[in-house]
Image 1 (cartoon, rainbow, N blue to C red):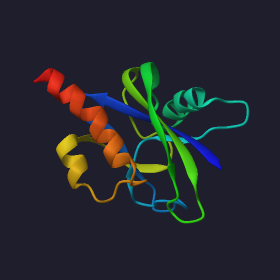
Image 2: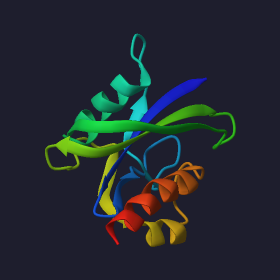
Image 3: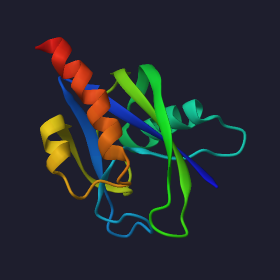
Image 4: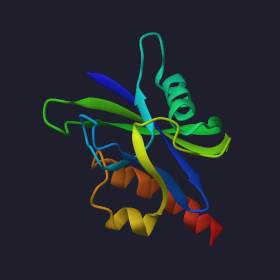
Length: 138
């Protein structure tokens, strides 16, 4: 089974999502967290740090493991997703390669309304990450 490491950059009560390129084999044109495959010899944490640098040009400075889930979507492409909550990083997030076509900060309310999140299991996990931060800042 594929192992995928993704990073949830969270600041000011919002999470940074990236819109996947329309040419992507899985979940084209959908909003998702940046990240990618865990390569041979890597652990998920190392893969998340490498992928955020490759895709967004940022270096995570402080993070914690937020959880993992298995996605069977699309059928035949099952993968285990390792999610990291990143609340401090070096650099300004930007599109580095052609894997994504847009970056956007989403609040919890916008996540609840967004129907194009991939994989679908991300919705609940992102809401859990955003809500505690929102209530602390209130």
